[in-house]
Length: 398
Ligand code: CTP
Image (cartoon, rainbow, N blue to C red; front, side, top):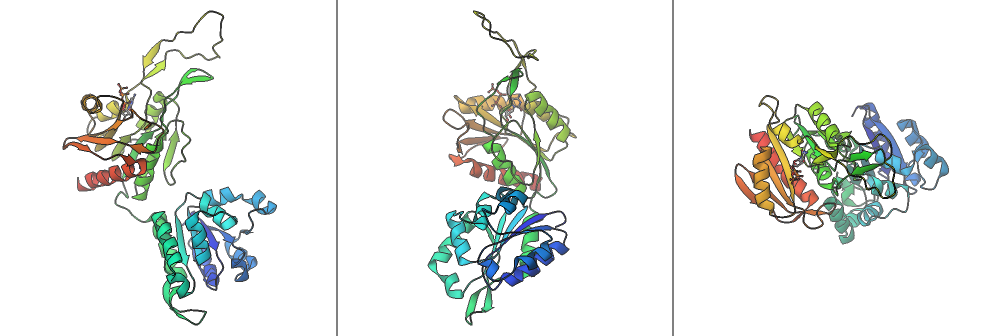
């Protein structure tokens, strides 16, 4: 937990007092804790007692100028390695399930890209109600983790499921969420993503339509399985997945240098759309328009990063080298020759004739020494999950 940053959202329920003990456990383990207290939470615990434990102000209002100046709601959600909702009331769960953002707590929850854990606490009938169970299913489908509730006597005098899990149990679930060993723990995966920009002069460049979405999805799937990821990306606007080592570059040459610097690696995935050529002798000053004269450029070839890494001697080469083949026509035929030319282990042939570049889906056929495996059209996230699952099997069985 040392150095980790936890945002705890305290909802309104008698179990809120247990969240004070949870904060104490996090602090004792070396984590930084920031607390967001909902208005109903403040009926059960005071900001003063929370602040005494966190050593930080308590954040309560979305439109509080002091809170916003101190730590804006976006920063509150982005600076966290983990967000915990404890207690998570039926009301908070309903708002989360529907993406409401009408107070500070729900805004932080909607804006965060950190893992989120909820520790529900409510009356047993409320817990069992079809609406709460529906909301729970939606939250679980969104990837939100849940601890409890436990069965037992409740403050309202009833018995059943609805008691918030004990602080030590929530604490160990948080430990797992923050660094649980996964099947790729101890493996270093190097990857490229996004386009490259090749300058013409200081203000103009040649680029392509790659959004970097597929690469980002792969990086996120690798991190989820515990890998250490060196993520070398060209200029993109997709958010950087959490927990990776991001190296930002612009040109193909810079990308190649960054890849070499990130070696050795257990596997390398080349998802970037690297420019094949760059303008020879790009200008240091802005090219001026001259009447009647059109500019002409000569190009030189960029390094082929994938082919160069595939050609490394065995001791330096990642055990598994994966490339993509972006093709608009003769997809399989072109991919087959590309795989031979680049000498990679797997080549994911990608039909980019439609709106694939920048779009949400991908249609992949995997070429490997086992043959050709066509995948159905899938969301880029599902492509990432499937690829990382196969990569995990290959790396852990070798
Ligand atoms: N690639 C690379 N370095 C380059 C060009 C491509 O590492 N200079 C990698 C890409 O990241 C991808 C694979 O090679 O994994 C194939 O890229 P693609 O653009 O499909 O092929 P090209 O080599 O550019 O060939 P062509 O433009 O003729 O299709």
